[in-house]
Image (cartoon, rainbow, N blue to C red; front, side, top):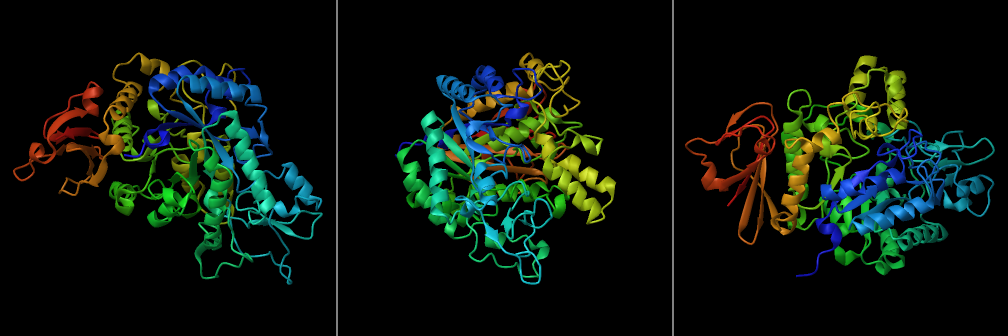
Length: 558
């Protein structure tokens, strides 16, 4: 058997640095704060840290507007702090994964400032004149802001393209000199000891020649057909592999690839094609997202079917990256669980459902203690640029009711994922001794690390057990996966993991009702084997044989 790469069995922990730990009491999380929690992360059992952007930035879009790829953001620390974080993490066998934001830069990057003056970096960006009748270069609209993707500087006769905010001009990957600069940036950080990259919107770097209009009968005119998974992206990624990745064989290349099909994902990650190692797709987490940020009904069956589609895709050959939460999503337990009545139960059921799936696992910070959505009442508490633009667009353009927009923001806003980590029950949740850069959630006195470390039946203790259980059972790393297609009761979903004649069945209740799990024709033991554990048992609750309680997960072995 070919030796497995470190990332194939890894449990990655994603951190939003500004919100993890404030070490110097300025209200902003920083790199030294992360260093101070490495022992905590080691005991949790994670293998790698994925850091959201730490580069110098004006911070218009949460650091995804990079002003200098070779410098650390001043409010996060210094290069020496970054080097120390890499060193100390490696001492604990924890890898470091950085963001590679290479589809766009900040408009404050010196490349763009030079481009505005029509200097040598002009062609690092995508410029186009308006149409003869005074219209914009094309009719593309941003799916993130609801506005045109073109801006013309006052001193210029051309527009520049920005798929995101106007502060994030898109880079021109058809320019070989630009690509060489990106490869140099990658080598710089790999030589610092970084173990890999999460490549932000990497499947959008190639644009259609001529940038044609979207057909006018296309809903919303978003234009993805001309830049999302466009064929030239594979040429660029193969070149990146040859120029950089082949020289760093243990480097992880994990691409954010929205809008892919399983076949397209395999084209990115098939090892023989030499492009990426892992892909991030979003079908399962976006099933209840409507247009313009509207919240749709969450249907567990639709969610489960999407998960299984990707888990079993290409005859079990897909290298999935498995996640339920991230910096772009609401909190997992609020999104899919029941915060009001079954927080512990649903948080641990969802964790088990996720972590025993096939693929590289990603846990978002705070999930291990069941952090929830913020539930802000005042719209001014939302500070994310996407939240603000969504609110403004729906109120002023769509003419939606304020109450409906606010309700959808409480459910789906990215702010839900970005507020400070809850370490203890002190005034600012142990994140800082001063007012944080972003408003706390109001439940930190009940949901925090310190109190859960002292509780043998906490969500945190369950995560530690679950991670250890996964790591010590090869079936969950190497085994194949099969959906359980038996006639399970409504709201009950499961899958099997199979390896070397060992068969585990994971059965989950996504509903707030107790269900009879066996009758004369549905004998649990003959189908699934012996029940070896349940989140209810681990939480000190009563689990009943042949019944499955609200948000309970049962693990069987045969």
